[in-house]
Picture 1 (tube, one colour):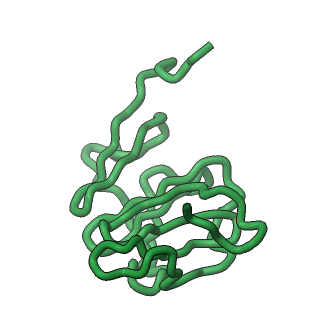
Picture 2: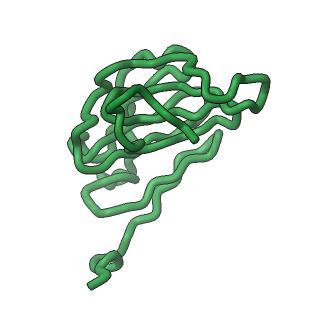
Length: 132
């Protein structure tokens, strides 16, 4: 089981590149070995304490093409923070491709997923998540 520093709380979001787990919790963003691709399981290879917006209501962290994409409920729609997957340094921001003024990740509720090469977004229909 993945255990962080005392008081680190449960993970807010997790991404993987197949060799490492990238874990965001209340103590920050960590890069943790998994035993795959020669990594040591549970070893923290990089850590950024107090990573941005850890106290936001919702988060997305995805690994795409050698970098991490991060956004929280406080991030402007269509904007992702770009993070270096090696040392977890913030490289800047990237925007989603826009066609005719509509961004892939806009104001509508959506589910985000990533593969090693692509970012995927499924827009949810109004009321689709109403479980009452």
